[in-house]
Length: 277
Image (cartoon, rainbow, N blue to C red; front, side):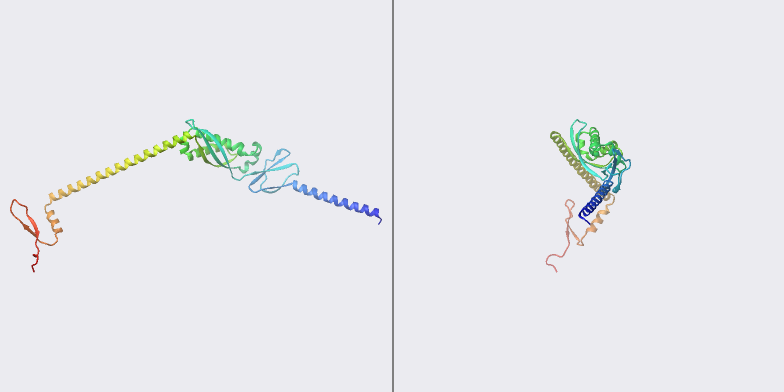
């Protein structure tokens, strides 16, 4: 084979190799462009030339139209974010409430939320409606009650927020992290709480004294009644005195000294004289 034929054969082989490489490259691109993977805890929204598919893609591996269909993953896991709510109480006190909101996107609302709300649904849907719910609830309570009844305020605001959001999103819970008041209002509430504690303490001391006094009266009445009953018993049964003397006798015969009518008789014990046998 002459050099010219060799050259043309090498050129044809090179062209074949390049063509095969191009085909392999195109196949790889097509395979990459025509498949997708949805990570765990997410659902995929398929958008084909600006049109959103009404059916979401589940997590895992899937196929799509190459180059013209895009896949947007949407998390359905529970998420936690923080927001601020500037509220006014019924007594026109400004209160800043820091809230932690636990929420998640329902699987059946993934496509609708992607179509109707731009960006993060927390910023466009949850945060403004939760803040609105808190403003409505705090407007019916005084600043002092808002501080004292945080759990009750939270419960009412949670119910109101869920009603405003509807079924688009699930608000699992709301946590009140901080309630910020003005320094003057904090001092006034603290002073009032101290006064209430002192009043409660004074009332307790008064009630304790009353109980002790009533107990003493009851005890005295009981003792007086016992004496009265004993006196009546002795009056009705004179022999009871002699019976008690016999019961308490120690076995030593008494000695009576004196016997005139004007003097008192003295009872002395009769025993062996000292030194007698």
